[in-house]
Image 1 (cartoon, protein in one colour):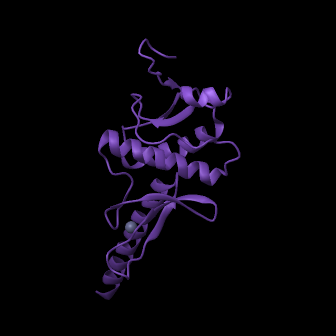
Image 2 (cartoon, protein in one colour; image 1 turned 180 degrees about the vertical axis):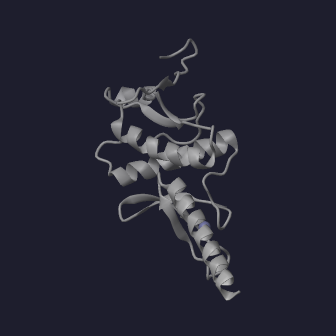
Length: 177
Ligand SMILES: [Zn+2]
């Protein structure tokens, strides 16, 4: 695991090793492919516990990161999954994924289509969600765009609503003739 310089090499985490993270990452990957097709899927990589940690605790756990398909990542490791609420785990994975995408691909993701702002993961009623800070105007307050994993559906339903409105308007105009 350590090379001749003592630098640890990340290893690819196999499916099933961290089921909670696997499940969360699948949802996050769904959101990534919806807005940045071809960039994912993101995967999990792990580094062994730092030597200082292992000295204190021989059971010190390894550090797990959310990485690009080529293995690059940026930012902090995922907090220990033990006992984490699914919403907390999902928000943590979404945040780690966002860091990696931003710093390694220079892509702001995901962006609110309405306000053109990068959104941030948060939690609402125990569920992980993407939040937008809203417009400059007080009539456009911050809002929750969608639960993490449901971005594609939320954009699709927005498009469909718009289409519907347009059709209603057209049929009204036709009736007026
Ligand atoms: Zn917005």
